[in-house]
Amino acid sequence: MLKHIIKLMQYTDTLHIVKDTLLDEEHLRMIQEFTQKTASNTAFSFWREADFWEYLAIGLSFLAIVLAVVTAILQWKTERNTRMSLSMKNQVYESIFKLLLNDLYRIQCDILSLQIILIENDFQSYPTKRYLKKMMIKFDDSNLDSFLVVFNKEDKGEAEEHYLKMREINRLIHNYNVNLEILMEHLKDSSVDTSTKLFDFSIINNNICFLSKKIIQTAESIYGKNSDVGTSLLHYVKKALEFYQSSETNITSIDSYTNLKKYEDIINPVLNNYFEYTNTISTNEAMLLAYRLISNEIDKNDSDVKNNLIRFKT
View 1 (cartoon, rainbow, N blue to C red):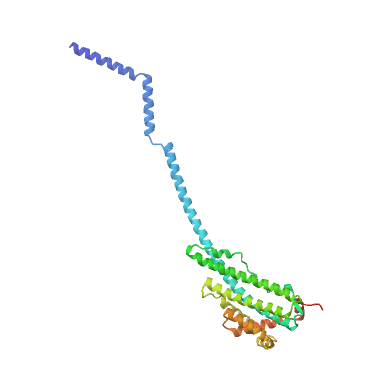
View 2 (cartoon, rainbow, N blue to C red; view 1 turned 180 degrees about the vertical axis):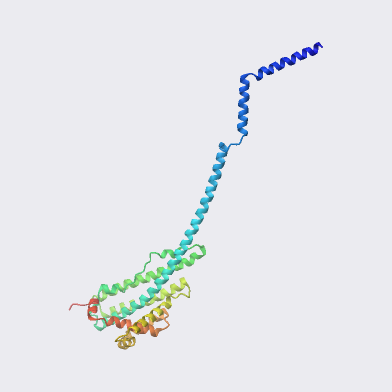
């Protein structure tokens, strides 16, 4: 019995110790802080520092994807616009070829008419610089580098070939203009003999023939054998003849041919050479129009002739 009483007293003392410990303010404060810290670490919070950096990384990744897509779209549009621009430039050059070929035909007739006029007066006069300037050829070569722009490596060789052909045309035009200036210098110099002046005319005529041929060949190389640059000359001839025939007054194209028959030894070899170089099919029509153009230039009224020609002082 005594033993039981002693144990009961020990238990009572232990309970008092636990009670005193729990009721101690310092211990209560420590338990409260520990509880709050545990709660804050386990509760959900959107703006926790760790979560903020995770969401920032996700946002930057999404922004990078958007920028990549926008850049790809802009590059595609740029390439598409460049292709369209190059296509338009090619079409523009094809039109330029046609106009240039027609101009060369007209210039050839003007050169022949000038040659006949000067032969008639035994080269005792020479054309004004302004008159010869009209026979010069202007060719814009500022955009020729566009022929080098390619989108596939396998097209690079062909692009360089086209570029070189265009540069060759530019070189031939330059040579023609230089030879025209030389002709001008010789014509206005009375000390230069007639044979030299006639030789200068032959150089100019050959320049025109070879340049015309090169234009047609280049057009076929770039635009294919079905290019209508070469046949555009025939269209020009037919339309010009129709115009003259619809407005015939005192003189017809046949009359022009008859009136200049005495000069056919000068005119025909040059024109036949030109037609051969340009593969002109309807040579009769082209010859008839050429005689008409030459006749018109020769038969200008006196005031026009005086404005275009200057006589040497005796």
